[in-house]
Length: 399
Image: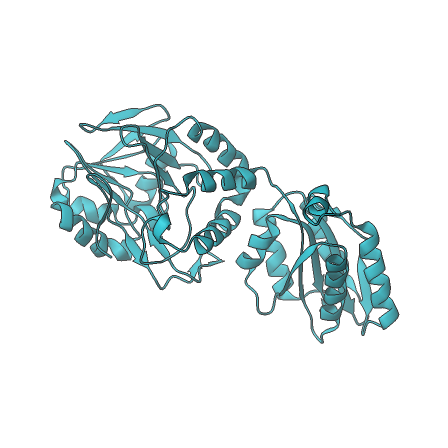
């Protein structure tokens, strides 16, 4: 991909990673981008870089605009190597450049990753004149690392938002109005669920700051640049930080001989006939990051496993571990499963979900060997008796 001008003398010069399929446990089936931005002013500024293997692509893009040796300033909004990995390579060309980063975490992080660099620390409220433009810095710690920083140019109303509002999405378009927006929002939701979700409180603080700014462009570190749909993505983030729930249930399971799957179907049927939408995942062929994306705005979660070696099936254990790390809020749960003799799996699931401060919707559901028709009927009655469809859902359906 060539350099792309997003505003007069401000360019995207990053790289598209069409082949990325895993980002530390998060499945990135549509690849990603590493967004780097070049500003031509009295001072030449590079905002963030790219993952180290893509350094040449970024430098080639910069070279379309200006000789990389003329870069005066590098802004490191985030230490993570997919943002900062090319800094050492850039400094080989831009020998007089200095790197501005968040204090103290950015200074510490860059030094620990790359050794001694020409670093300048910045904090919230600091500004930097680069000619006709001013860079305003706002620290956004734990969105999603301690060093996170966003940079705002008031003369152009551009927010370089770092990981906020990003998506792991490789595509040939750079701006929102030229992209498939259903796909963009789908990936923005998945990105939030798998990267940002544990830090929603910190995101809320950042949104409060952002609400005071006039913004014409949001330029994140991954994915599409926001121009036309800025209010929509900000509104969407505001709904996510409030942990807004829908009348939706996520049913996940793994099953040795299909019996836990039969129970999962009975629970799903009970939700559906009660007016609750369902997303069901067999964990033997579903990725945890896709499941979590659906859990984020779901009111109910049913987790099932056969008992295996006095415990739970490894795929279910993996899911619970992943769930615990991200910990979507305000969920009512059902623990269920089949067993041959011990039956420990259901209690293990319930204990894990209790530890996440989730509330049981029903008593644990445990069936020995093959579920009988009358047992499945009792499961459906039990689940339906505990459900309360929200007023919003009833209004939408005209009831």
